[in-house]
Amino acid sequence: MTDIFGPSLDQLLKYCNGTFSLKTVLLIADQILDRIEWIHSKGLVYNNIDPTNFVVGLGEKQDKIFVIDFGNCQKYLD
Image (tube, rainbow, N blue to C red; front, top):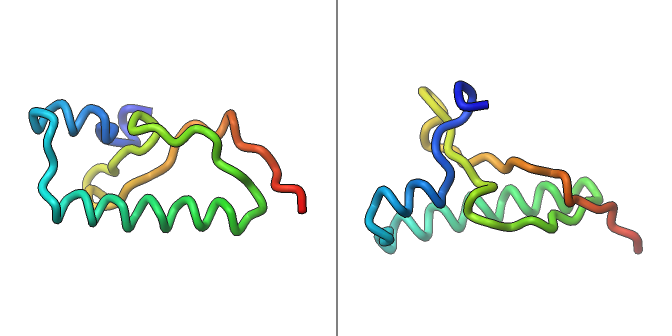
């Protein structure tokens, strides 16, 4: 998986000495909320929200955040 995705948000935060700028936080939050909303639209609840489960892409997709580890997802029952 290391050749498909770049570092996790946890790794990036450590690389940045534990601080992201406000702009970075807002850009990350916007993408994460979009991803979680998409997962919920498929009738799933993502139960593993953790910085290690959000990774950035590589190459042309280095500005995109991807969600990994769907092992704890559950179907939403209405």
